[in-house]
Image (cartoon, rainbow, N blue to C red):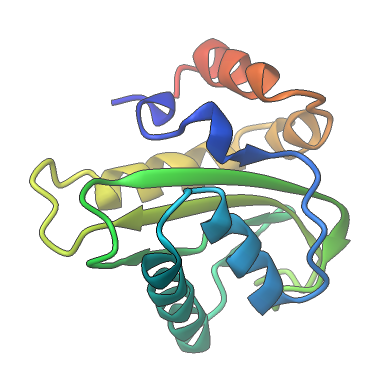
Amino acid sequence: MRLRDFLEPSAVQLELTAQSKDAVLDELVALLGLEERNAQQLSRLLKRRELLGSTGVGRSIAIPHCRSLALSRLRLGFGLHRGGLEYDSVDQKPVHIFFLIAAPPNEVSNQYLPVLGKIAQFGQMPDVPERLRALRDPEELFQFFDKSGV
């Protein structure tokens, strides 16, 4: 299992512009190219998930995630917010790096939790946040995944 298997180049945005947690979730969902009704449903579920506890895991990384009927397979989105965004992160620092994970409720491949774990482990590797924040084009992200073995 590799992260790039679930992430389309069109779902990578290196210049997020949102100024709030809810707005950045909407911006990340838009990367998946869903029909409007499905996108709204997914955004609502992600915002509800954030009410249970922030998905800001520290080191300037957030991993918003949920399951939704709006999807037929597991999908990832990646976003970079150059200025950083207040996100109620566990370390109380702004978040710059966003990995969105969305999957259907009854995902056949059962990759949701392994993908979440892989991203969390990847984020803990030395210099990963700095390298991700330095990305200049989506292809660099995929090359970094390949080089890191994720």
